[in-house]
Length: 293
Image (cartoon, rainbow, N blue to C red):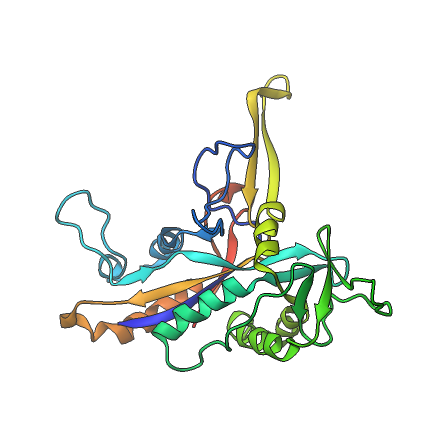
């Protein structure tokens, strides 16, 4: 079995829905039950990749769509891709890529269980609710002189005090992530590091509910050009610049392990260019970069 780390970088708002919602939002995004963490189901990545694959081994690699016993599972398996960094409006630096210790430590645990080299940095502690960890020289910090009573980072409607005591560890995490997510662009690597921000787990949970993108949609009556009866609804999406992470496993049966090399050679062509993931494709949702390491 071969395991790969998968990152999804949303270039437009990403809607991985769950159908009709019971609350104010008619079409909410998928979230984990216990953590409320948004995620992209593995099937939402596997489907577009299967459609884009034109080789002779499509059914072997991705499985067959069959309701009877003649179908077979594919050699390639995808985990759900959970939110890793949430883009959040910032007074300085335009926006921040926000994450939390739980998110990073959970990712590190999964990677260290499967990989022995190039694993993430060490455990990171939870900051206080009114504090956040950023790198030295962060673009998110106010350029005004810092006083004992003044916060220097402003995200959405929240204000924080930056903490320098964790700057080295935060820089290690930012450097580890930038090489994998923006490995082909030094400019975007720098931008990511300057806007990387770690907040308290409880604060991040709050932002998961307040920093998503909510869009009101309508359908017009063709004749009157007014809103048709009952045709106003609200859709939720992860904002553009959201970053998600998951795993891809290549696990052919023992008699076909020689296919691993050919599969790892063929598949990268599928994500050389951005692909569409999730729903609402006709209104521009879900244009994403897929990075496999």
